[in-house]
Length: 528
Ligand code: NAD
Image 1 (spheres, helix red, strand yellow):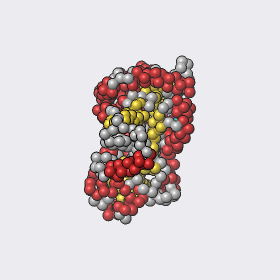
Image 2: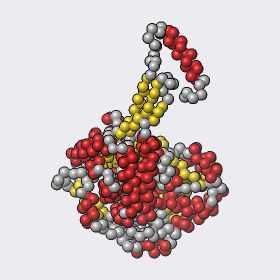
Image 3: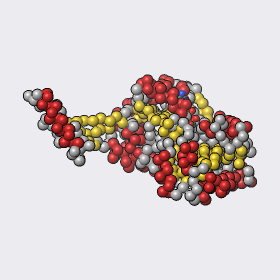
Image 4: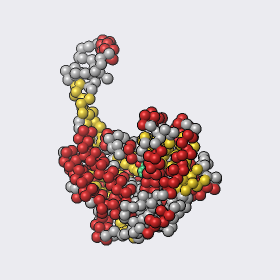
């Protein structure tokens, strides 16, 4: 590694948060007096951040009860009023960004620009849904059973109480951005953030309340997922889950038993295709962002690269050179491009995957080791060549700053290898815009970015985002991302004639009339 890494090793270490803020945020958790507490520590330097209650199933019960009561009054308020509150939340997020970014960084160890990325995403999601919810939710006239005689209207009612279980990697946006459409649709929310990152979720909830959201409408319970997940699923009307595929399967079974809807945003092993006609400089920069944002702890980040033979020998050295010049460091400044991993468990997975691949013959082109001189949980951005099936790194999600590069004959082989996985979350293609857009639909992934790593599709909030295959069920964003929190209802008003034989008509005659009508309707252009 170059000395650039060492130059950032002396940046300011992560500071503990203001104790008054920590106490205020912990006070937002719904927990009975005297509950045991659990502490969170900063990945930067191991400093104690603060304690939150270890909630119990009884606390979950109380949180859902409060949420249910508050939801009735909330659903009675006009959509436009709910939207105004979410737009104030958007403004508050931007105005209070210094404090929000500090909390997010101290709790996750991520670089400041990655913390900003999720703050901006939460603000943009709030803006998008606050502007579009009235359109998505409004009662809509539909084609009736008998044209001219049946007036049919589709309504969207809130489900009631929506449970949200969120992970630690983007603890701000993944805690609130899926809750925003649920709230706008007239639901209450009970959130269980990851045990490692409660304060980031809580500061967002505090801003929602400051923006005017009724305090009881957004409940938070803190503690271990396996303890609080089952009682939550027993009580809520819909569950939004973001996390690993393993946990997603457990939750899917529990939701199925209660016959409640759920949406799951799960893991990925996302491919990047570098084709011969790409812009080399832009591709190198894009690859660094795609692979190492949030130290690779991003569900949509790239872990496999398939590079067309004609460009491999120019792209790989340029990419490796750029990775070696990445600025890594801890602290609350804007300088580091990449921060820490979140936990020892995460560091262990990264080490295990790299060591296993190297032991089985992979070559380290750069990186490949922890950096305890920067912080106990730092790992170098790593590029590996010669990775093959049979290595853990090739099949399983690493969720760290590691990417495997492979040479492919042509675009067809790149597509084939990109699709050779049980996952289907995100993909990235670097080529001419036209060729990239033509190849994209052949990739089995919920989002495909052309000449961008992940941000173009993710931030297209008007369009659905989610996983194919083992990467998820359902979608967030766009129309699907709000209507999943609604019960759709069809109200059909029949006029003049019944949908059946008119009184006195023989049944056989009725069947003949209907047969003639069906043939005529098929030829009528405005009837679908
Ligand atoms: P995880 O599944 O272990 O935990 C996620 C959440 O689920 C946490 O809040 C945890 O407490 C809770 N949980 C754990 N076990 C539970 C159980 N039995 N019942 C109910 N809740 C339970 O995931 P993780 O490893 O902490 O997070 C990283 C994973 O999340 C990666 O696989 C990543 O790809 C995925 N992820 C996906 C997206 C997406 O949008 N598709 C976004 C971020 C992260």
